[in-house]
Image (cartoon, helix red, strand yellow):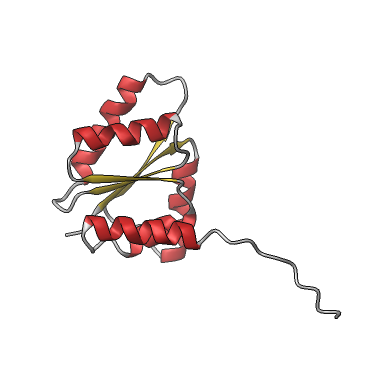
Length: 135
């Protein structure tokens, strides 16, 4: 049993990230969906769609919800799922390292998958400096 993974993002971010992750991993893992938000869709419609996806993705181990920008409509929909679906966690600030970690460790329990994803997201953000080899 694996933790389900739902990305709730601005369009087309989630599908694009999933496409890249699939290419890196050599295939699309089961139990993952990208829900992309279009700004003119009413919040009630988005919330109902997210709740339906959560139910479909939860095979008994819970669902980790990844969203792109805290405070935005996708994040607000994601956070609203915490009251609807008890066995879910939400992480905002989605990036590719976070997604890869979540997919790689989906067989762990929900809290451990969330921690691995969070760690991957943080560790994947680096300041890269240019090195001058002439000195």
